Length: 60
Image (cartoon, rainbow, N blue to C red):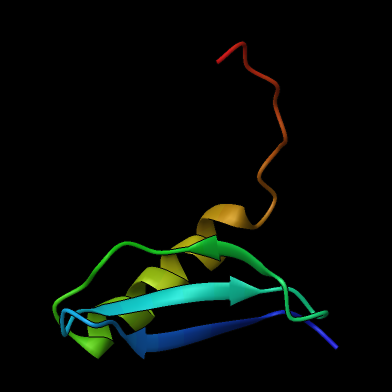
């Protein structure tokens, strides 16, 4: 089973997303968005940005 994005409303009434691995572990969370549609677009942006992204090490 692949991971999945979950879009939800937080306590402040903003919409957020979290990316869960296939084992149910949360591996990433998104910022607060004003609308559910904007949160879904945030998920899509992460999917596009991660496709083929390289892993690099930094000092900080």
